[in-house]
Image (cartoon, rainbow, N blue to C red; front, side):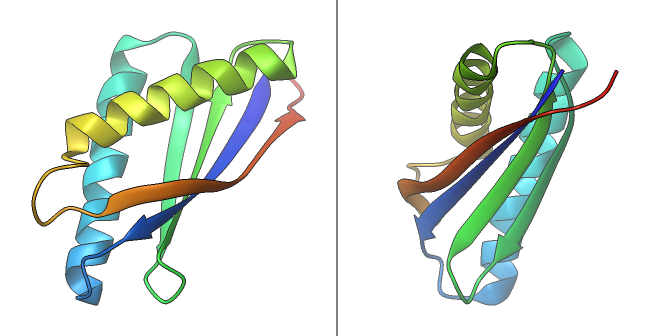
Length: 106
């Protein structure tokens, strides 16, 4: 099992409550995907409106870190779309700032 971490730089909204609300919507979408995908568990989203970043962590049931990150990026991308990314009034992902994988003891 691998812990995948993806840090996203996002643009807008300028209002802190709306920014953190968007992070909450992303968390909800990740939880929905977790419920129907046995390959991932325990998604967590944290948000920093000052840095305009979301940090996503999720456990991925893979032994290979590259395969784990590929799966994690796909799940996060799907959750972003499900949460409304690229729609009016929702933050736009500018780039992935960081990504990392770390083995997790079973």
